[in-house]
Length: 134
Image (cartoon, rainbow, N blue to C red; front, side, top):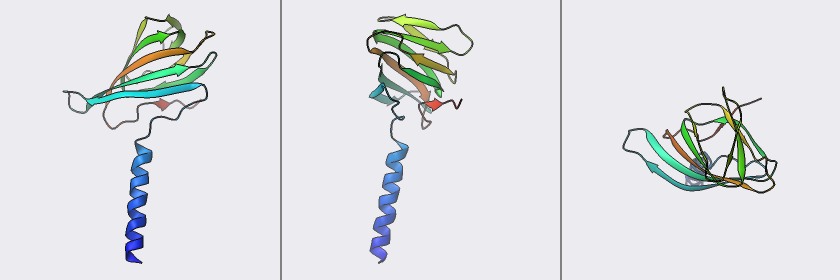
């Protein structure tokens, strides 16, 4: 009986840890592929790179990150709504800098999949994406 309890507790701890380290939930019409994650020479900071794809007409809602985001559009066109600035539409090969903890959203206004390479310089052990409740 004691061995069964220990096994059950160990399994619950393992599953809880696995859930905490999952990537942000995928919204319909979006795909996020984690490419790399490394600690930086600055204590408590890390760099994360993610390939993000948005299907035509899809919006990824308002959110923020616990650090800076550097966007490079790989394919298609993507519109970004960054708090305090007018919307900007970027084409393949264009870039955007989003300051830490700045609320923003992305939308694919095109007829093909829009793809970006998102590079984050963020606080370690913080959630990468924090959705803003409407």
